Length: 252
Image 1 (cartoon, rainbow, N blue to C red):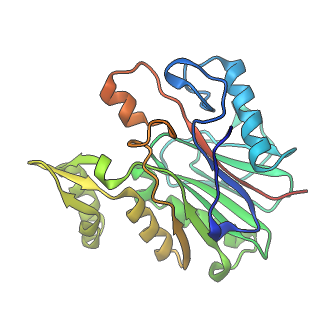
Image 2 (cartoon, rainbow, N blue to C red; image 1 turned 60 degrees about the horizontal axis):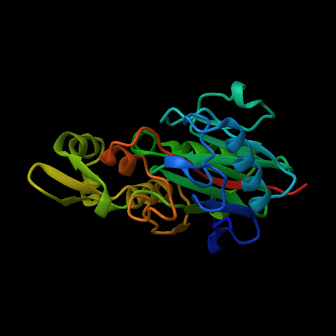
């Protein structure tokens, strides 16, 4: 059975944060792997994507982007998988479109102005988060007619501070951007820190003027039965890893 995680902040808007349960893939990508960039069977990926859509907004057209860890956001169009624009966030006011963001430790963020009927989805890895991908998403929604004070956001499953060790140069990059970012790093073993990606993403969303933010606090690295994790697969020397999907859309 598919594990569809919902956020109270997005009540009234069709959405779901999905994990690895309920899919047809096998091997190291066993479960609901939707990552076309993996070495998984394309037929299994297609079936997993179909199941994901049915779990979130049955009958909708799935729209994803070619994620490149940027701060860029685009307005959704009806494009084929091969023609996806390179970006890390997407917004729409069009009924029948289901926005999808793939992750495997990075933070998926879903946004909605339910009153205006405008939604957005962002892939906030550390590079994209630092580059302002969440701010770009909020700004793009406002250009479509959303109101900043009405936008709600939910941060889905991502790698947690306890699982996210980084080195000094990584921490320095954030502190040079803003000295207040020091609060997202806890001391770890010598020369290393534990980075709070979820907390940083939440802070950036708040800086963009969004006041209703739900951080789900789910750790992709630690919960192997529930989520895919790039870092966990890397630490184990596995040859591949799956991707989960976060979805939000507007019914026809």
